[in-house]
Amino acid sequence: MLVANSQLIPEFQYWFNTFATTSIVNRYEVPIPVEVQESFIPRGTVVELLCNEDYGYYDPPYSYLYKNEDRKQCWPTLTAQRLNIYPGSQYLIPATATEGGINIFNLQPDDFLMLDVLLAYRHDSTALVLIDATATMDATSVEVITDATTGITYVYASLDVLNTSLSKEIFLYLQFRLYENWQLYNTEGIISDCSLLATCFEFKLIDEYFSYMTNRDVAFGIDCET
Image (cartoon, rainbow, N blue to C red; front, side):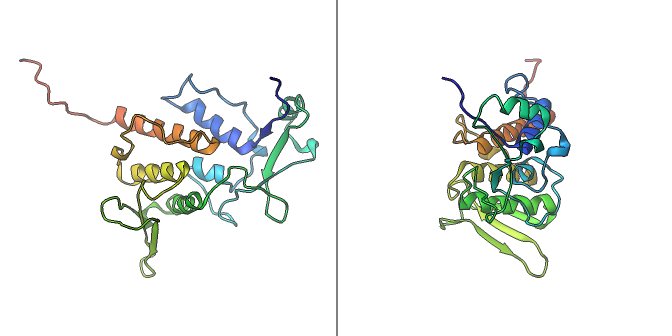
């Protein structure tokens, strides 16, 4: 079957290229995307929030709506050459709702909730407490409480109450980054639903787990003299 069209999100291409070229677990296994010049990369997007540990302050905090850039003269030269092979191709850039932006990643309420928690972590990890409420919470939703005096945000959540792959992965990522808790990912299956963001963020999550496991000291208690 011939490909009739293609969609390219430049910052996704950029950040996933950065990850794929430095990955340990996925080296030589994940095709490396074509590199897009950094000057064409918008800032303050949901993709950057997921990938950039030095994520900054933006207004709005992160954008997730996209529209097609109709002016092909604004596309990077190499990108234009590749996309123009397929007549219906699109070069997607951040946009507001009034500009016709669409939720291209189909983000759901739980995704936005955990993206906000991730945003808080990116800005100040010391002001975030993420509690795995598996054994203590009977509620069917995540609870977020901010102490007005200390400014510390307490998040009560669990894998059981989060309903999307991406929100579960962000929860696991934060549990690991805050507390080195990797046991929650003790599974033979994958979490991703094969959607673009969830799949690529799980690649990142697995890579972080692997790096941690290979770098830590493990005592197996084996007596080689017996």
